[in-house]
Amino acid sequence: MSVTDTTSSLSLKDILANSSIKTNTSADGLASATNSATGNKSLGKDAFLQLLVTQLKNQNPLEPQDNGAFVAQLAQFSSLEGITTLNSTVSGIAGNYNSSQALQASSLVGRSVIAPGDKAVVDTAKSLNGTIAVPASADPVSLKITDTDGKVIRTINLGSQQAGNASFIWDGKNDAGEVAKAGTYTFNATATYDGKATSLVTNLPATVSSVTISQTGGELMLNLAGLGSIALSKVQTIGM
Image 1: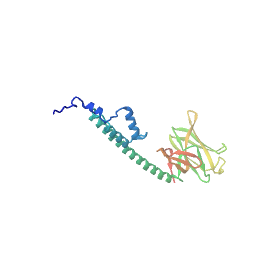
Image 2 (image 1 turned 135 degrees about the horizontal axis):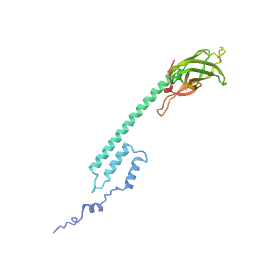
Image 3 (image 1 turned 90 degrees about the vertical axis):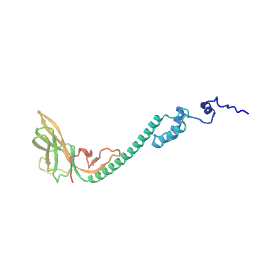
Image 4 (image 1 turned 180 degrees about the horizontal axis):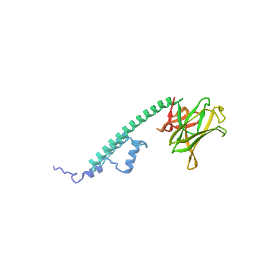
């Protein structure tokens, strides 16, 4: 009895076509696998690995994954792992920075600072020390102190000043030599340049009542009693 080979005329492709092996390499299939792995969320390392395994399981046996492409995908996976680790490290550093800011903030509450501004809460029983930022040599430089009613109660003439910070002291008295009431006063400094009066920046004392810490890594803000807020970087001096 002779045996006849009835499969010799069939190719491997024909056999696979008639078998139960199914491949899914379409764009819809890849999208479906992606949604299944990620749940419509950002692609993390676990989802990336799941997609890679799914791709290998469903590749076409007749056209398997190219070695170069496979190595490139592994390199992408390695890069993703590195980025994830870096993000974790940066998050840890940010947490330590916020803790450091909190400690720094707690030490500033109740302290006296000198910062740019035109208003100060003054206890007239004591002398007030401040500075005037003089951009260039000027003659004369003067300072007018105004109360809450807008009345000038004291004028201090500083005379000729070189470029830099010109210091001044107010003893809390008005032009008549009487002690002024305690409260908030406005300080307006001017200098004469080319015959014209120019406003200058005054640096005045204030007390830190509280501190605002940014949750996004921004700068520390000092809340000054009765005067509003100012960035820590603008503070000229921190006292007791």
